[in-house]
Length: 177
Image (cartoon, rainbow, N blue to C red; front, top):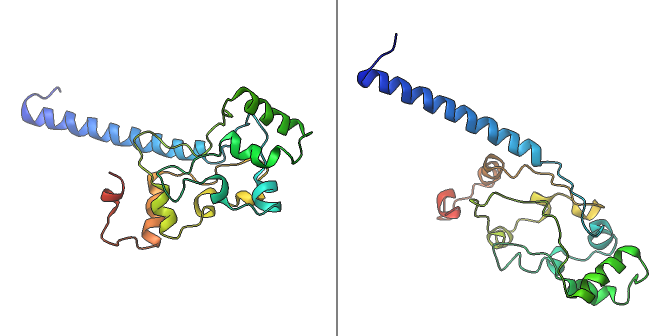
C-alpha cells in the first residue's frame, strides 16, 4: 500500500536516511581498510631504514615543515643532493636522483599518507602537542619502503584524542575547521 501525505513522506525520508547512513558507514570502513598497509612503489627506492634507522637522521631534518605548517613536506632534490653529491654517487638510485637534479625537476613521490581533501590535519599542532611521528606513521626507521600502518580515519584520530583526553580549550570541531 502506497502511503501519501505527511506519514508517507516521513517514512520515505527515514528510509533514505537509513540507506544513506549504511552506505556512508560501509564506505568509511572500506576506505580505512583499503589504505592501511598501502606501500606504493616510488620513482626512487628511498630507504627510511638506511636514513632514519642506520644513520639516525631525525624526521625533522628532511620533513622540515612538520612543526611549522599543516603539511610535513618532503625534501626537495637540493636537500637530498646536499649529501648525495658525494655519498654513494655510483648507486643506481642516487644516479636517478642526480638526473632529477640535473633536469631541475622534483622527484614525483607517490603519497602514502594521503587524506581526503576535506580533512584539515595540522602537523604542527600535533608536533607541538608532543606526539612522536611514529605514533601515526609507525616505526619508519625500520621500513625499507614506507607503509601506511594506520587507517587515519576520523574514528582512528578520535580514539587517540579520547585516550589523550584532548581538551585544552579546543574540541574536535575547532581543530577540524
